[in-house]
Length: 256
Image (cartoon, rainbow, N blue to C red):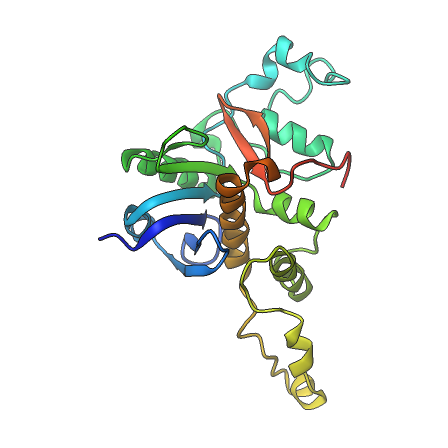
């Protein structure tokens, strides 16, 4: 069944909560079409129903392919990394750290990767089986990109965000998306509804504040929408051979 007749931009986070996957879908106007969580098959059932879609996955595409061991690639950096350093990182992870954006390291062997990374690898393989190709591809109606939500929020804010599991971190992330014209509730309304009595009783009106996993999936969907509709407003780090990370800004600051 076709769920949406226009392009859908879907973010999938395999790292969140008791259920292993959270997904969010936006349209080209940045309106929220769907937000849910479930097992991989639940997410794939939703993705399979899209006529056109760009899916952003919050996980590496594949294990470390050893790109940073190539002397020719290392020589492209200014200054180049010290001999023997950073060979255990993907090129995108090294570049993020050059900009002072923390990033997990992806091991070269899949069995040595954490569960959420292995879930991501499996998800990419299942998406390929559904006909999804790697962005960008001319005339392709179904594509995938890799997104790292912490880096997305860092570049949107211009600085390292608060930890995502804190109340202030959730508020900050939702506000960053709201300011980017994603059609979400303004989290600042929360403060209008906090009274002395509610605060003393621990009754906080958090119904319109999204969870960390939902916010990560939303950041991924937003990045996918930009990549498809305004590619000049995104940038990519890394090497195509092992996976590029897309960020929702045209240019990066030297350091964050």
